[in-house]
Image (cartoon, rainbow, N blue to C red; front, side, top):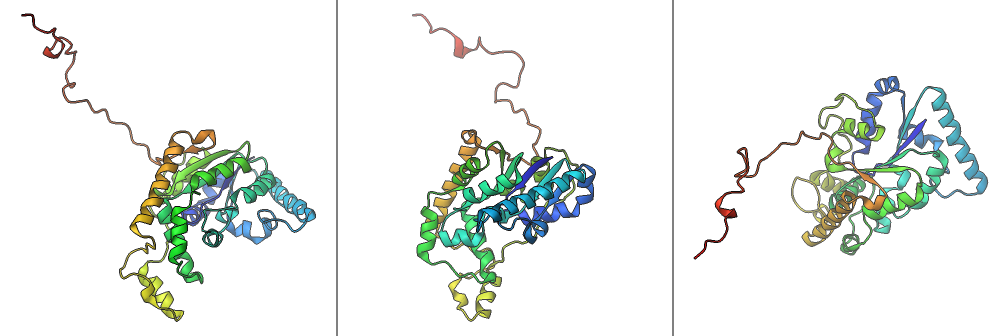
Length: 311
């Protein structure tokens, strides 16, 4: 049985993907594809696996519990098992507390990879950094989070840690597993295409664009209302109706540039550590002839090829 670990990340459409898969589990079961989502992984299955164990005995019991469940899925006929839970790599709160992008991902994934071993593929969905951080901050405010101070925003925008470092940590923690990376901007609203990429199986179109879109971050009016209900000053947030952008133009530009560097590194081969898949619906390439080359034959004997005139 091939085990595929879908790690999210947070705020990249992972909940939408899980909702889509649950809605189509009967079709996937017919293809011998099993699925474990947060409804299973967060009910004791991964207790003591990703987090640092209290004792060696707890670690052995946790690994045994995962392996026992894997054997059960295999007996039930699954040839591919997709395990999807964004909390496997940490939490948004820990990222904001550390002002870093998933600082514990290597340690956590080394334990998870050992528990699920062998793991065929690890799937990570990434997102432009300024929108990932902004979405994470907006997501946490209704859950008790505060508005980060200016110093924290400056630290985040100048941090050298990016998706490239997260992917490098994953490669070190998951030896022998393929690491597949996809951009949220391309696959976020198309969970069916993401499923096809991660499973390696072709699926007929099962989801309209954005059909399973859930868990979007609250916009400014909702965030101001939350602050007011908590007795805080809603004027801490800017006026407007759209998404909250906590960063200055300079800070956002830094984060966009870092993300562009990450994509360039991935497109160049990611030092052999990961594979980037970008186009969920590759179009048939169109042939565009250069102006002047739309006729048959060659123009080698034209005036531009003549010898210099003699005097």
